[in-house]
Amino acid sequence: MTELTNEDVREMQRFLAETCADVKRWLPEPEWRPGWQSEAATERANEEHGPDGPWGPDPVRSVYTAAGMYLEAVLQCMRAMAPSITTDTTHYVPDCLARAAMEAGSQAFWLMEPGIGARRRVARFMLIRASGAQRRAEEVARTDPGQASLYGETPEQAAELAAHLGLVCEYRQRKGRRGERWSEGEKLPGYTKRNLLLEEAMFTPAAYSIYSSALHADWHSVIGNWIEVTTADGTQAVVMSPNRVAVWGAVLVAAAPAVFPAARALKLLDHRARLADVDHWSSNTLRLIRRMDLPRSWW
Image 1 (tube, helix red, strand yellow):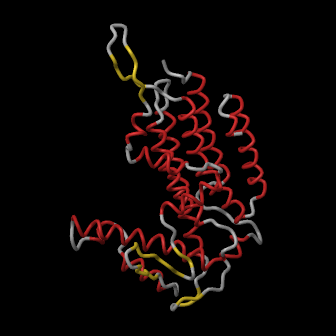
Image 2 (cartoon, helix red, strand yellow; image 1 turned 180 degrees about the vertical axis):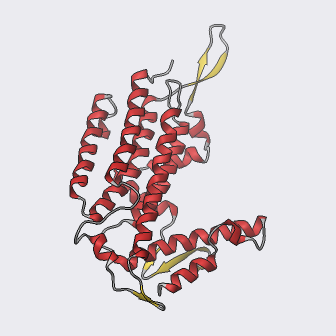
C-alpha cells in the first residue's frame, strides 16, 4: 500500500504550480527590466569595446535572456512533474526531473552571479556557447559529417562572435585529463562543479549525486522503488513501493533551481520588493514541510 495520500498529491501539485507562477511574476516577460542604478543597469551602460566599436547594451541583455531561458527550462521540468505525481508514484521519475531542473538552474545560477561585471558575465555566456557548440560539432561529425551548421551554432560561429566582442575563448589541454575553457580569467566549470555550487546554495547536500543515479538508472535507484513480499500462497514477489518522503524531496528540490537563480537575478536588477517575495516563498515552503510532517532535518 502506498504511503502517498491524495492530500500529498494535491499539495505537491499546488506547490509546483504556485512556484512556477511566482517565478513568472517575479521576472515577467518579455524582458527583465533593471532598476535605476542597479547592477544590471550599470552593466548595460558598460564602456566595453570590441574590434568593431562599443558593445552597447545588447551583449549583456543576451546573457540575461539566456538566464531567463534556463529558468523556463526549470519551470518546464516542474510542469511536467506535477501531473506525473499520483498516489502510486515512485520517486524515480521525479528524481530524473529534479536532476534536469538542477542542470538548467545551475547554468542560470552561474550566469547571474552578482559582482562580476559586464565583461566577465558576457565571457561566461561565451564559454557556455563555445562548449555547447564544440560538443554538438563532435556529435554531428560522428553522424552527419560536414553538416554542423544545420544543427545550430558551430564552434567557428561561437569563436567569431566572441572575437567580435574582443573576447578570446581559450581551450587549454591538460595531459591525461579533460581540457578547460577559459576567457577573461573565467574558467567554465564542468556540469558537476556547477551543480555543486547550486546545491550548496540550496542547502541540499548530495542532491545532485542522488538524482544523477536515477537519471543513469543505477540499480539502487531502480530497486529502491520496489520491495520483496510474501504472497498469500507463500511465494515471493516484488511489488512497487512508493516512498512518500523521497517523492516530496524531489518535488522540493526541483523547485529550488528556479527560485535561487531567480533571487540572484532580482538582486542584480535591484527589485527589492520581489526579493522580499522570495523570502515569503521560503517561509511558506518551510511551513509546508512542517505541516506535511516531513523530516525535521529539512526544517
